[in-house]
Length: 488
Image 1 (cartoon, one colour):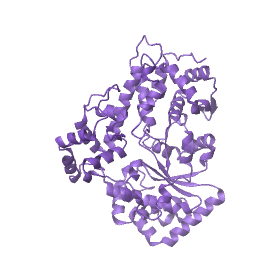
Image 2 (image 1 turned 120 degrees about the vertical axis):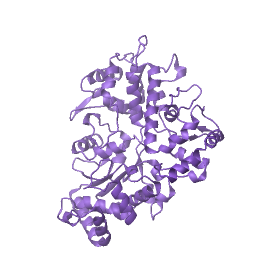
Image 3 (image 1 turned 180 degrees about the horizontal axis):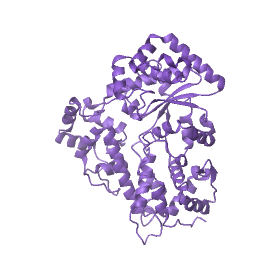
Image 4 (image 1 turned 45 degrees about the vertical axis):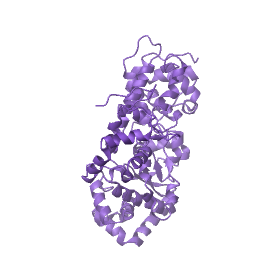
């Protein structure tokens, strides 16, 4: 049974099923592609008010999914312990999509933060969502955001009474009201303002821990919580210690892949039938969605058999080169071992679109998988450029360097190119968005910032290593590793 090989047509299925771009951008994802990792149930629970995840880990995905009653019903069916129901009330407190009636945009927010306490700004956002479609809505509905924040600041007793009453009404019904916050990196272009924004939101999360049914939920990136000043308020540990991370262990990544392949409208049956032949599973159909069998979501041995029926058993001519099932995610992790599902799917789609080697007996050639890692690295580097342009400035002089290497070699290259002085000048000219927090500490400070982003990895002998997902795209080498891509 385990000798089954998928026909080479599976490549076309993979290209059709896997998206060219998995970024959500505020658009509700197709229900068929809504995979529910077992480990994410805790993050979705209303009591998990602070959810942390790297870029591409699913923060915006869940922010969008939770707004859809149809998707909430699917989540409730598949993850009954998530606390999410179709009837769960959901509002938005901030996100990438402009919704000026629901929350202030970046420019408005920066103005508000310069004038008001950031905690009061976010309390106002929450309060406006809570009183929407109630008799109290008229209190703020015709006021500007500045006027609304001023009113909330001036009328604490009325705000507290309104929130208390709304919480009691929800509790009687047994419902939750979630107010979702995402894309907080879009709230400001400089660290001092962003830290002030996020610190104020964390204070609001702390405040609403005492309510029964009103639940602000913030999706943030881990580097946003690195600065010690973010926790510079009383009882901050009660929020930060309760954070829940969106992680993607290997079995969940492959479960996500199966979700896409098994639900491809034209030819998903090819994949589902192949799985049944390999591991003897059946796929249930619920709400127009083929459900990944539990055995293929959890058990790695079955997953390995299915993936190797597509790729073959080795990443080369023999087992010394590694096994595709483990090799691929191992080469896509950052310095903390975290793999973005976006990178994972991008690598596989690119591998499927590569010109195959006709003599190879399996559908996906191992050299194509390596090219997929190169493409995923290009994408990850491009994302880093969008988020932190200064990283590109620091990495250019390192092109061609072989890692692991002593940090002194990296610092020397920076010094030879006068990189840190140039970077400081760009910052002073406001040409750098979200500059490195520890630039003032020199090369060692920059090293801390790159380690916090998962770009650098400190080895036991104090040498610097780089995970392939960054190394390849930034043009650095590693003996015996995936070949670096040419820098443009």
